[in-house]
Length: 414
Ligand code: DSN
Figure 1 (tube, rainbow, N blue to C red):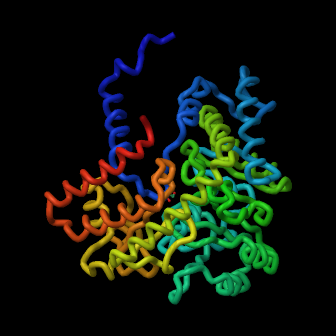
Figure 2 (cartoon, protein in one colour):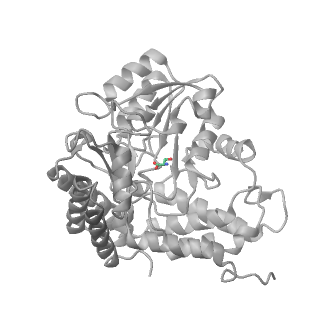
Figure 3 (cartoon, rainbow, N blue to C red):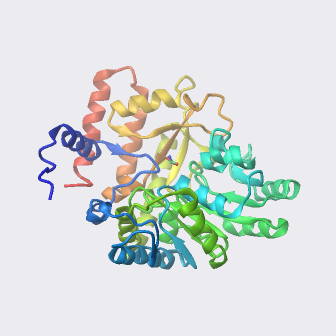
């Protein structure tokens, strides 16, 4: 047994202590982040990190896998049960890998696919030209309407009829409304396409019954496990039985080598946690908090893209609040005020993705910490104050104290 312990490496573990301090004392509003449970972290920091397990349970390339086989089997069964799926592959290291594995399993290079525009809320792996998805496949993008900034399923149908894609990729990273799987399924059936639903952001809302479950309608659903689902940083694919073999082959050996079995074990823990009745309360509270925060921000003079939210996030158009204020500046100012979130393009943003006119704000983490509607009103007020007083260092320091004081009542980790 190695005689090194974590207390010896102060150089690194001091950094971890400072990050713990940051997470405990500043307000976490990044829509794709959450606070995992100690059980998830214990599994992720376990001896399973030591094991090589290329292959699948019962069919591995190395010996000594009988115990980890049980962990992967448990994760698969729990993942299937959580979403009512016929098959689960719990090995993707990330959501991006899960998406690429789905494409590798089901499409040929050059095939036409429909995906949501990145600058209107889609994801890099939904066909961005700088991503492998956009280089290997012929992606055609759909977006939101100018009038109400929502998906228009009739427009998607027209596009699908014109382009005859092999699949429609649904899902988003910055879209504050429910994505209805039924009209997408209908369109896919009309044009003979597969439906791939990337539920990375909303997997926890689906598991908690706050959003419609695409699994009965989609051929494949991919998701990350660390956002609203509140598990380890990773990905998973669930699919119809008919695609199981192709999906498994695409994940390994198609795209990845040895799975991260400690992370697979942590996924098993997270799936169990998400199946508890209390997780339904959590998912409902995430949405209620987002709606309360959106309403309070509108009261501060911000414009909410699409007028509000029905999920865990909102997109804030800063221009009515202050035409000169960019997302980049707002993110930096709020960082100094102890409020963590990210700049984001809004639909038809005149500014670049590095500057932007918007912010993306999410409630999964603050809800896990125990904050509810009253705290959302307080957070909106802090955001408004900070951005109005962005050149005033003393005011920002005061707001940071208020943020720390609020967090001290809701520490995610003791
Ligand atoms: N980076 C993730 C997000 O924040 O939404 C998407 O991959």
